[in-house]
Image 1 (cartoon, rainbow, N blue to C red):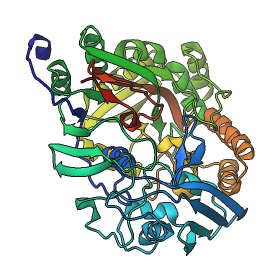
Image 2: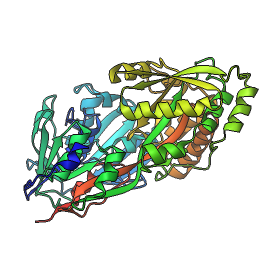
Image 3: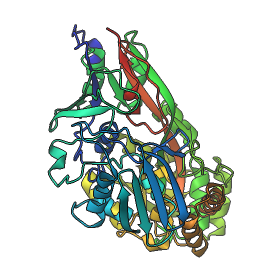
Image 4: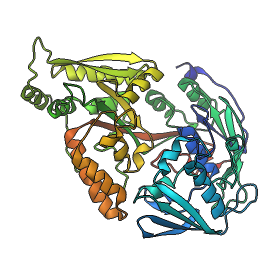
Length: 493
């Protein structure tokens, strides 16, 4: 709490908003960067073909319209008034180059697999782009939105050193582990940004992040402060704390190859034994909401009308008895939860240990350095673990990645080894159905089945929490926790 004792008069640059980020972006080439900082900054520097609204419906962006004459063909009609930040017009040739370089392997990127179902791309004229698919793939439009920014024709592997996009801000400089500087793009085709410059200042330590805000040497931090610190900062008259329902999803994963956890009654008993209310209130300081699906409630495909597991230790005991696990000296069986050494994760594990003990489950906790922990999780080498989905849960096609039989770890993200033929069939049907209402009905059924069978136990969605100095105005906090609010933010002169 030393930062609360520090008083410092720091005169900020009147023309530069300083935003705190926890780490440097790994690669600002939008074809390559997959870490959160790269993608969020890329969305300010580049434009995608398709945009998203607050319910994650798709909207026109660089493409002012599109059509699908058949399930294998998408025709996009580009705006005529877009230029890159170096003055070159953005045309269909640039769009084709952006995605051809991924599909043909000119650029080495984890994003290449996202477009594996694209057969080829045509650019019949400057303002028309045609995507041809190998098989129907309804998530193509989603994958062309967000951080799928368009780069100029000919951009190679060194493009990230000085990226050039068409977005509301343009790149100025970057220093590893120090900062990224961007400035307003005066020739932006859309509504221009109000800010002259933004410095993304890298501060890995949470206490130092709070100190920078208190000293007024930084202006904004989003989703990067611990809950206890936010509560204290709310008392500072020179700071404003904004909160809104977020989409970051926390879950408990259960390995279904485990001889104990493969029994659905055991998984349901664990769900009934867990009480999220005190965790949300005391550990998270009410900066979260209970979760009932991987998809966030704001999403068009969300279905909250599924099986729910209110805190019911007696029901948990009955299910465990039915599964054949009787108490002996107060213990039915032992299971192990792997965690990282990060404090909040270990605190969560300690609370779960206490709650499960009440129904006779002995939860052992083993903490590992983050790289080791994530390597084990990626391989499926665990019984129980808890992680979060950040951004990955905004497209319902994620069910294929985390619950399809073909996506078993380590190949994909089905690290629970969950397998259900009906879910597999629904996932494939959802991927090939273009009508959004029909897709919603399909994904409703997926959510209902998964809620009954519990490869994941839903925990909560974290709120978006933004703290800013009072010289910053006109901030609109969106559900995804992105940096889009910088498009409209202003500094008081």
